[in-house]
Amino acid sequence: MKTSISVPAPVGAPARPLLARIASRLLLAAGLGASALAPPWGAKALDLSDRGALWQVVHKLCLPMHATLGLPLPCLAVDDKRGFVVIRAPGDATRIIIVPTDRLEGIESPSLLREDAPNFWAYAWDERERVASAAPRPLGWDDIGMAINSRHARTQDQMHIHVDCLDARLKKALAGAKLSTQRWSTLDLRPWGRYRAKRLPETGLERSPFKIVAEEIPGARSSMGLQTIAVAGVTGAQGERGFALLEQGAGGSAEELLDHQCRAERG
Image 1 (cartoon, rainbow, N blue to C red):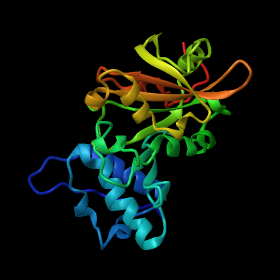
Image 2 (image 1 turned 120 degrees about the vertical axis):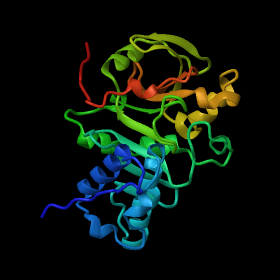
Image 3 (image 1 turned 180 degrees about the vertical axis):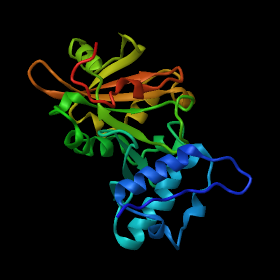
């Protein structure tokens, strides 16, 4: 039996298509109807601005479902101990989003740089099998990437990391780049422009890329909102695994380095 859910706007307020799209697609994918969202939270709790939609999906849908029924729906997973949820991005077969369960506005949130801050990048990489299992082709270590957009380029004001297939053009460029683990290089990555990059060893995500960028890029700590960061799996000439850490500080979108269609080749 097909079910549906509507997310009404307040009386006199304009419709909120992004919120409705995120909530309804996630709920329909989970097989939930409006009756499943009866008390204690209800549909009215979803009346928010568009930029708060992601947080509301986490806070008013996934977490209550997990707390009351022991199910992560409509999220893919809820990790109480480490403080994040996993969401399948609406409309994309492979892309997942890692979202903290605490309210963190974005890359500029000061708490991300605390020494005891959760390492959401490591958590996100641990969830990459969800991308691989949904991909139309076999994926290796160097076929997957992660990204967070700058404050100016994002559409949601809840911190989230995208995990998806790496753009095949970037994979090729990184395979030919001689990146150092000690210093940053500048790469001219067409068609995306210039990124700073350095190599991390396979254990390199033990320290959060947020902290690496803040500590090593001049001026980054005081302008984290302008930073956009990507992490790509790379394989060395001897088959050794590692990561390419890429950074751009001009208010850009590192999500552009991912391919949400997961194509093996790009022109």
